[in-house]
Length: 170
Length: 122
Length: 158
Image (cartoon, rainbow over all chains, first blue to last red; front, side, top):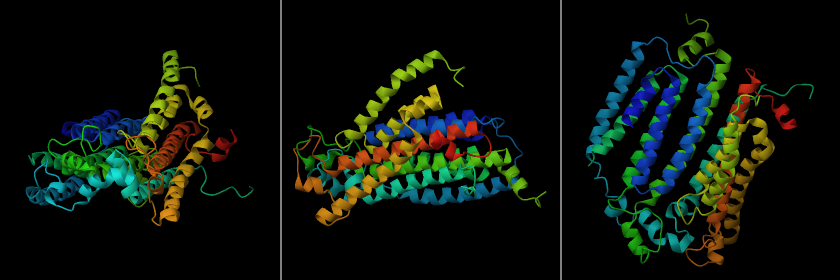
């Protein structure tokens, strides 16, 4: 996936960059499956296909197949500074991270996840606990997320419209 | 075992680097997608439990107490599910915006868009 | 417009699309018992229409799912989700309360035991399906209509 990321950023062909992004997405879907998250694996595969279709449609514009242009030094310096700073702080933070494989539930006694797991079947009747968290315990998140999709569609429609305002004679 | 965190961090930093340095709008969208993938992976790794089961109650578990002892954390999974759907709508909106810019300026290069939008700039 | 399309692609897409649709329905309806749920199911259902859109053109896709219906589906899904939430508020005093499961507790591990989760899944599936289809449909129309953007009235008149 790291190789895919490098390829995605540093090829000149836009189409191969998009396909490299697809490699990242399907790779992360496989990792989700290994980490016992089948819901996420399904969602990631499907969403990745849709994203690829969208990006390829954006790439298929006439005359935009390659990403050329002169390179400037200043953005690279700024980016190097920011990335370096982030890296240093992240290293300090990740030193204190717990081992992979010890969840929050193992370390804290009254973690909310433990409550969801223990009471999920009785309170919601759903055997898939991801769905019971998503649509019952934390349904506000889903509501906000539905709002985001709605806003994205609305923004897309507004931007793709032919005229900014209605014609005066109608 | 925390080495995997550093790989994810490298993925995130590649994405940040790309967002800042790339000149092409499609490449910027790809970088944003890379950042999203890195963050999703990180959250799932935090919720993973060694040798855990998927958070779906099947007949193999005697009762919910045994299930809660074995299952991985469902909470980050639900949040990441939300995050994935938000990321696809974000990508769609960004693509719509960049296509609009392409139709106006005839290019995806942000330097040239900048140059044409601002006549004083060279 | 349909001249350069391959016969194989047209036939295979005609055969594949119903099965993809059916799989999407399964993923939506059994989201509370098995992996799946409203989001992936809705996207899979939308993908079955997008397959028709890409393989057989705009007209065939609009025959299956008209633009107006897709636009309404987006709104209907959101309204259905909110209605369930408000019904929970009315019946048991909490926004998003699972009132069906409280009053009609079913047998565990059966289809009708999760109360409002099933309805919420269906609502989210409808909504996501409509939204994804609308976005991709407009991106496909944009190529034809050219530079100036889309004339919405001409689409709705068809």
